[in-house]
Amino acid sequence: MGKALGNHILVEFMNCDPRVMNDAASIERDMVEAAKKAGATVINSTFHHFSPFGVSGVVVIQESHLAIHTWPEWGYAAVDLFTCGEMDAWISFDYLKKCFSSDSYSAIELKRGSVNLLKRNDFDISSIRTKAQESWKNPDFSTRNVWFTDKDQDQALSLRFTGEVFHDVQSPFQRVRILESYKYGKLLTLDDMVMTTEKDEFHYHEMISHSAMFTLGDNAKNILVIGGGDGGTVRELLRHDSIEKITMVEIDQEVITACKKHLPQIACAFDNPKLDLIVDDGISFVKNAKPKTYDLIIVDGSDPIGPAEGLFSVEFYRNCYAALKDTGILVSQGESPKFNDKVFSELNFTLKEIFGADKTKISLFFVPTYPTGMWSFQYGIKGDLDLLKIADVAKVDKFVKEKKLRYYNSDIQIASFALPNFVKELIA
Ligand code: SPD
Image (cartoon, rainbow, N blue to C red; front, side):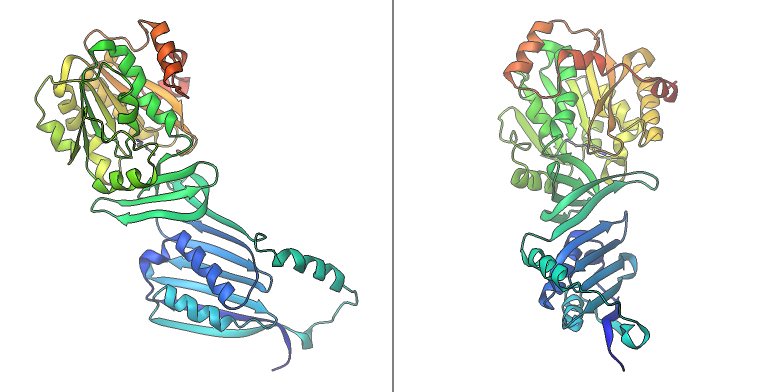
């Protein structure tokens, strides 16, 4: 065979570990390492996870590229190892075979750019190349481009993440991960959905807690939190001295463990003596709760897929209604009128049916790391309480200042209940 510019190995890796095949972060690490082991200089890596299955990515190297597309459901990876110069891509092949635990594979090796078929242009690029090579040799030169995506079939929110995976455990209920993003710090994901991030968690946790707490005033004594395993909601609630007891029922111990270890500024109130933390199913807890017990019930659940599905049922909210005192408030994570308008409006209809149309309210707020950024809390009210009237604004202002709140204030409380026309139509 004549001389060629490049060498291209087209690889089929079969019977691979499906979990590895669905993990953009570990595939990126393996591909970068495979390149380095073969002596390549890494310039850049871009990897993307597709929901629910699959990863595509490229590692650009000074000597060409390594690319991959995976089908985890088939335990399969299509890998291209394209190299030029002296690099031995078979070293990358051997390394990846081990990383992916592939016990069946095939490869075709092709010469690319046969010089017999090419005509060399006569210009001198050696000085340009020497200059470029200087920067490529700098160890900080390579950039990583790995994205975490929270999406449904039509829309998505992507965060570029550093590749750091602090926690990755499949609990009996869901996959619990703590990843690190460049813009929002560490984040908790459950089954590939963003739950909370270090940099914007306060939007959610301040809003889920303080509007209801200031509306109840000193009567907010006995609180029930369903879900909320990251700890942010109880952290905010416990800023209020009126509270005598919070019962928190989280189904997944793994979420608590992961957040205590990796998100301690959110999971910082679990040792508070006013908190009774129960690891159990919140749906049956509410079903068996003593009637008229709680001043406030907060449903800080995940999206209605997996273990949180029952947190959107009519029966669950009937039980919450029964467990509330005659004067009390229910606040529920209400999904997004843009991202999942159907669940959003169905929850509203459920609450209207149970609490009555004039006793149901929706508050909108912004979370940059949830798909579309527009999110809601939905309220059911029992008794004579008005979320749109703040009894003592000066008291709220003092609290906000003292506790250094960063999202909630008395103006936001009122404004958050103003709904855009399209939302009014959704719930009409
Ligand atoms: N799609 C995100 C829905 C948010 C669910 N709860 C977040 C938990 C924060 N404590």
